[in-house]
Image (cartoon, rainbow, N blue to C red):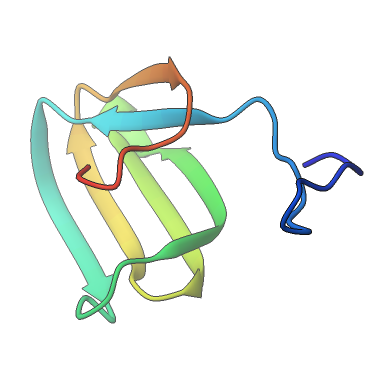
Length: 86
């Protein structure tokens, strides 16, 4: 976010990106508050013991939160704002 505002008084944001996490195989998961979309408050990627995979854990500012474990985690970074239909 910048210190600039647009004509409607909303702060101008820069450097948006969509980050996609993809597992080759999901082995476990726990999700809470799944009845709404979520706003990520914090996110961690943790290596599981013995090289058995990764756990992606997120806490929320609003809505869904939890963790997903799996093997073959990859990340894709796409510059720009997310699509409403995503």
